[in-house]
Image 1 (tube, rainbow, N blue to C red):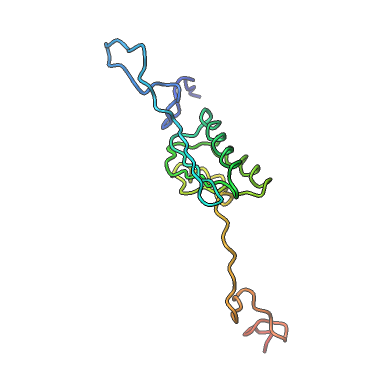
Image 2 (cartoon, rainbow, N blue to C red):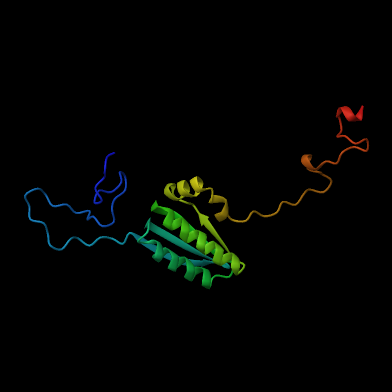
Length: 170
């Protein structure tokens, strides 16, 4: 069994605690590291009776509370619910999914909905793997059948107990 050092991040995942700035070998390290951009930013705007929340950056254990606060405030001030625009999310883990699931429960309790608009590849992957993507799709308008047409699957059996063209009709 190979043990992994606790300070080494998983392959492909940058630790939020490690600075992106690395001093050149032999050079003195700058005592004040360069200011890191915030790993998560949100903005919101009204769109009819809904509120759209645009999310940019990384959603993980540390940034999930920021996302939750922004979505909860948007839900509170919306008429029908919140549309989360997640196209600019670079990293998304179960923390982000848990935020959405909790907010969905809160929204449904007050007759509102939460939808995900344009999920990034990272978001789509988590929603697909967990089977939760359908929970955040916009409601589909009900289809109104055209007059005089009966959908194929809803045809009634013939008076003889079978469907048209079945052996029971003969």
